Image (tube, rainbow, N blue to C red; front, side, top):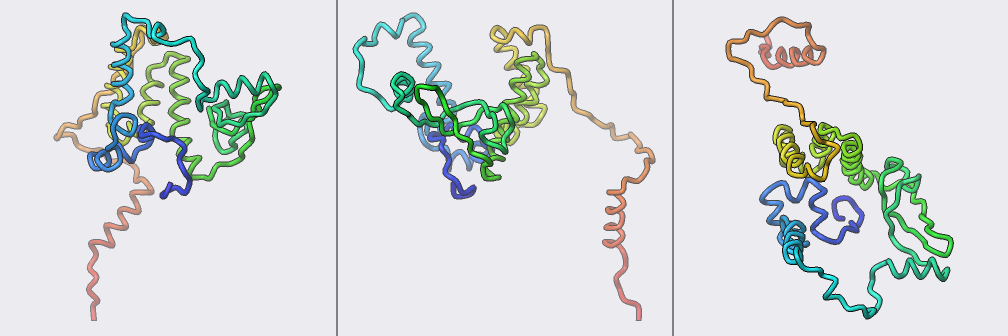
Length: 243
């Protein structure tokens, strides 16, 4: 909020996974991600899911739920149902497809905007342009999501790797070679749930090594290098004034 000028609505440390500044160094982790669980603890969501999955692997959790209705919570669902059935309007912040609601984010991406609900259904509000810096923060993740969707629909492992490589936090922490290796490991580990990638693999991209005895060949001078040549002249020429 202090650096970009607007309050961030994400309310947990989970936000730090989508940005490059908080989890990419030890000093960032110690300063910004020092709260337990969803306040910023690394792996919190995974550990929570793993704990619940193990506890209820052979037990139906619904048997412990009471059929009695509890008092209404802050969750939107009952208010949306009430608005649809009674016509009593309810306003929420809803995730919808961007059909012109935020004009400086791509059409078709998922955006969160104010939505009114009544007997006639959902009525999203048009926002127009976000402040440029806020749109840029969103765009950094929209691009990743678009590539991930393309990878899922086409079964192209290269698109999956490229999506991960463009993730702001991943790109701040890993080299492209590390990201490619990680993507291959993930596709193998998740293969049973990703049948569209069956029989496909990432192409090899070995590092290029140049032997010490290789001699460079003459090539046409790049205009940009001509500037470098001029800099070299300026740096080495004799500046002593002759009287």
